[in-house]
Image (cartoon, rainbow, N blue to C red):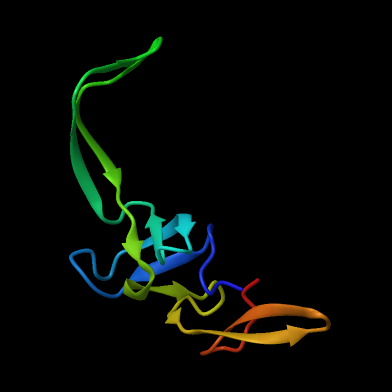
Length: 106
């Protein structure tokens, strides 16, 4: 079970965007990276390309690049603080738990 999932709110704890919060859009578990909305914005110079009928818009494109999971911490929805994530069993289901307030996150 993953500690951070798509849709969670996280806070960046290292790098140029330290202190910023955003919602996780995509998680790449094998690469241990995730895409956070509004964080790690990069520019890509795109050439005009014709692939079949679709044409790619040329120019400078800004988008969110993936960031390593170790550089973010989950923000608890209840106590609104960045926190570590623990796991516990709730009946037959394994759930994520906030280490600060012991509230179930899932």
